[in-house]
Image (tube, rainbow, N blue to C red):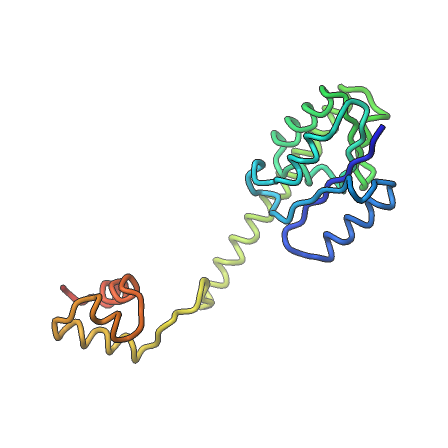
Length: 194
């Protein structure tokens, strides 16, 4: 039985280090530890390291994860991936202690994974809802989102003056060192006519 480990984290280096240390403490050799820096909601196919890890797994190998959300954040994704591994004879163990398929029969594993997947999906929906509500409140208070504008009110006035004088978007953009599309958007937003 070979031990393999997989970690996933969005961006936090500390979270990555913590997961790698925990996998090593479980006895996973460093060369058998794989991980992706990618969000849990990203496309499953974008997880190159997970794909490599899954390709190496053979019957009676043990895949150790922090928790099942490392495989995916939806119930369907979790069930599909766990079922694929079970059918290949691969065992799965989570560091949070909620799952060790080497100690359970298949039906119990599927039930537990279904419940855990459902809980994870509900948690994700809650995070998305709270984030959306927080953005709405912030917007109502005047908080601006997105990249900062690369131009100011003086440049807008200059663009509008030049446009009223009949200058083209490209000419204006070149004279101000701006992108033509940016100049065009400013003119359209400010209500000038061509």
